[in-house]
Image 1 (tube, rainbow, N blue to C red):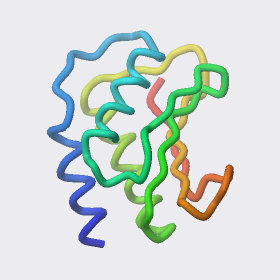
Image 2: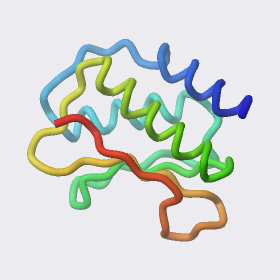
Image 3: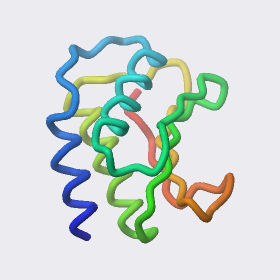
Length: 108
């Protein structure tokens, strides 16, 4: 739980870039926020084909879900938009393989 709170606090201040309407650019901004926390176990990835921002974090599933919602909330508060598709944040665990343990939608 402490790790989740640290993720939430770091995400709020991690990226001060101005919002743009380009979904892929905003996806990379979200990845930069995630990577800058230092709490994820590997580099964040963007897939413009799958409309996904994917990262791996070693926390219980319930905390991964909370972190996912926090990431989407920060993207919304920064004014990031993801037009042209159903963009999502996909969080995986080191043991989940290709399956996400948490996912949430990013704002259109």
